[in-house]
Amino acid sequence: MNAKIEDDTGRFAFGGLDRVLHEKARLGILSSLLSHRRGLSFNKLRDLCSLTDGNLSRHLTTLQEAGLIAVGKSLKEKRSLTLVELTPDGKERFLGYLSLLEGIVSGALANTEAKPELGWKPA
Amino acid sequence: MNAKIEDDTGRFAFGGLDRVLHEKARLGILSSLLSHRRGLSFNKLRDLCSLTDGNLSRHLTTLQEAGLIAVGKSLKEKRSLTLVELTPDGKERFLGYLSLLEGIVSGALANTEAKPELGWKPA
Image 1: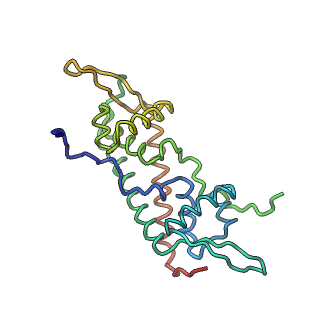
Image 2: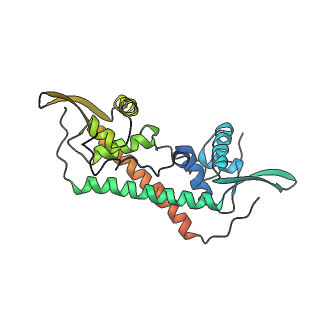
Image 3: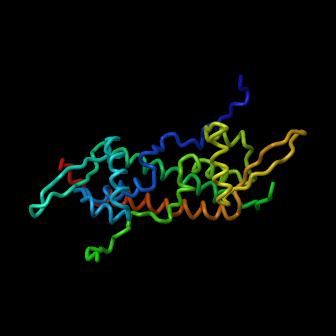
């Protein structure tokens, strides 16, 4: 029996912070796509996020498997172009994630501002 | 020679987003410590972040090696207690990270609000 359960147990577990979206490179990819509603070519996305071809491919596979993005081909000047877009579900989930993250950040910063610094003492 | 360099190359690379701080569990640990200036015991931190002993230990080692936290022992009622605190450098870096993240989130949300939805079309 655990008699020491406290109200704030799990307060900083951030359960809703989906690792598929939170990973740094994927956060960049999803942010890029959110600000380019008509999608981005593979090469443009790679350059915006400063990723290698291999890294971008790997992250796109993860995002696609999670249903967050759609990857298709389009023809441009007779050349095949890989086009990447957010799915409607991906957009909704990414906006939910951003909103959650906004709350975490403002909560953390509020805690900092509310309490005066007491000074750090080595244990 | 790459003749296709564009102004927004790397715009979504988020280079300053340190993976040591960004990882979900460590984000929880650092947020907990930021709101508890006098430090937290190992057990309290574990409960706040809903981590296992093993997971918390592993993340504390990573944070300690990066100079972000200090781990010490104190005596409480004749029992040794592991106490975890942010270092001054850790506090500064975590605040910098939060500030960066705040900018990323507000930038992404602003992009969403500024442009009307054009509708998603499969490629």
